[in-house]
Amino acid sequence: MDRRDLVIIGGGPAGLTAGIYASRASIDTVLLERGVPGGLVVSTYLIENYPGFSEGISGPDLMIQMEKQAGRFGCEILSANVEKIESNDKEFYLKTDHGEIVAGAVILASGVQSKLLGVKGEKELIGRGVSYCATCDGAFFRNKRVAVIGGGDAAVEEAIFLTRFAEKVYVIHRRGELRATKIVQQRAFQKQKIEFIWHGVVDEILGRNLVEAISVRDVRDSSKTLLEVEGVFIYVGSTPNTLLLKDLVKTDENGYIITDENMQTSQKGIFAAGDVRQKLLRQVVTAVADGAIAAVAAEKHLAELK
Ligand code: NAP
Image (cartoon, rainbow, N blue to C red):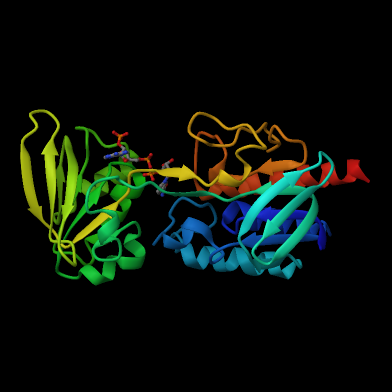
């Protein structure tokens, strides 16, 4: 059995920053990531509000740098999926698809995943026109008509990005006012290729093998319109990846982990950092701050154990 001081679960900005801080403090640390390190940021074309990059930086470039930085201090990054975590109040036992690990502290930085819209045709047409990542799939829609569902920052920013390729981008939002920040809204309103469909909800995504159309209902009078599109990009928020810990730590009604200001969860020795935790602002800048604090708090906890 592998024995470590600290296990970090998740290789996004929070997890990698925790890895940088913990490894630099000579804590025996392993970071477990089930996919590719970088987290959701990897699917962001341009990050404009992360300080230090006056012209912005692409999500993949920023995350490559963070991963390299963690590696420079000796943080080991393993590709593994954590299947179970148990605690005997002193140590944590983690069962992964690559073996078992015992650790003195755990930082959960497992992030969030895109919410499904939950309409007919969505699951059937994923990868056949339905996407949750414009940066990954936008180029397939050159000179085509696409729809973006949602009115938050993610929806509006990705709609702007899609205007590089698509001939027409419908943004379908269920209210008459966007949730996205004002500067992003203003940019979108200036794009001629973007057409907003207000008070609209998608009832069904239609298509045999590929997306062909969506059925949009006006919530004010229930009238329906069939919009011919070849791509549907869904950005209706996200849900936290907390299944692993749901019996071990307290969460809020939406499943986000509740921590104190030192990232300590309700279970001593388990810390949470980044989007997975209950917080006001889910961005890279707050994720990295959480990761740094969690690592220092974990270091203190480990010192108390010894
Ligand atoms: P969000 O802010 O929660 O927005 C979700 C949007 O989807 C809302 O407009 C919501 O409508 C709509 N929606 C939710 N459920 C729906 C449904 N069933 N049918 C139709 N529409 C539905 O999520 P997000 O845009 O993914 O952003 C998440 C966090 O990341 C936010 O804090 C955001 O600021 C941040 N973020 C920041 C940046 C950036 O700063 N560069 C980029 C992306 C994301 P209502 O408005 O009516 O609730």
